[in-house]
Amino acid sequence: MTHFNNRFIAFFFFTQIVFFSGCASTPQYEGAREQYDDIVITTKVYEAILDEPSLRPFDINIRTTKGVVELSGLVNSRDDMYKAIAIARGVNGIKFIKNDMRIPGTGDY
Image (cartoon, rainbow, N blue to C red; front, side):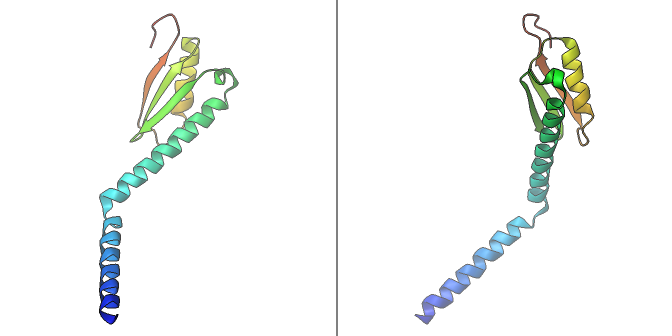
């Protein structure tokens, strides 16, 4: 029985060392931090667009990857498109805004 306990304890410590050494590496932490920042940016842009009554009826999708925000969906006019972009620009942490919004029937991007 003691032999089994010693093996279990050794296995437990080994797995903890492997687990925690993997968590402490910088690239994994940076990747997790980047993902968290992207989620925060997406949420802030989404909330800001919803706070604008003239943009509420539109289905504007927001996707953020490494600080680059992509706006897509359908809006009624170029003014609505520009307004959504301007609102997104007001959010901190954005590196670049990619506009994929479209106006139905015009082929406008």
